[in-house]
Length: 364
Image 1 (spheres, one colour):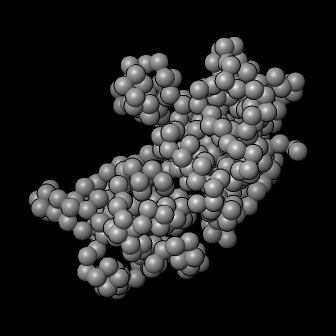
Image 2 (cartoon, one colour):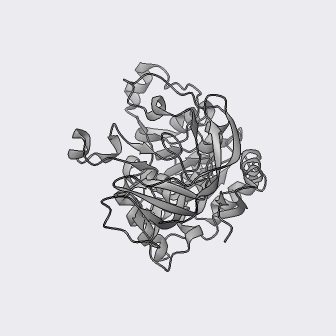
């Protein structure tokens, strides 16, 4: 058990969208919990949206959303790597010093839904940085059944990319998008999520892969990571360029990593009849699928995507450790907890077109 009594942590007042870095007690793991010493924790766009008050919380407990369980004060950060630092009562499957990543969603594994095997729909899901304190702190808690062991060969900074920045794109491409070898794939927004979508789509054999972004530097990065083409989504000749690049076929699967009305509707429009349009990025903007007549005739499918099953996160640990997926170039910057605002500003302003910025909370 950690002998440290206090720690530094980001604390967000969720109803006021105001945050500070404070000294707070190191949490004590309860029964079937573990204490994790945070080595690195990513800064994600959803963290920014939550901290800037762009996501509304809800008191509607019938919605099935964890947003109605958001506490008044919470620690942000959900892309966590670290080591086990303390064990709660009844925990026997971990020892102090074990290297882990912490999944965002932690089911209780005891409820009726979990007994069906659909763990991500657990009504008691503990969601890091939403319903429970996250990793922009020196320590955080996790349900003991949830952390995923990582090998010594996998650097902890690389490991922090896996829990969301890599796992969400993987699941969007492989599970929700069900991308098959030889299918044409379009990806809107090539930031932290979209960049890894390109890599995963390449891994599963999609062809061609076309990236869309308004930044020239980001489009070049997409090409460097495996995209066959990269276009400015504002190009007046865009439709003709996509037709030429796909042999007139258009896209079997489109993935919107941005979540804006303009990106979603453009992705849907470029999806071929019977194709799949996957909504991955999240904002409060409303979108339309057009008339029900045209949508019905097209037989297109629109699928919502969120997160990644923990069993697939384990697969990604193996792929990254084996070098099949390279995240070494995905870390654009590392900031201390005290300099968190610097990292938030860099990501929010797109300064240097960052993929992922990591927070390193500890002093060693």
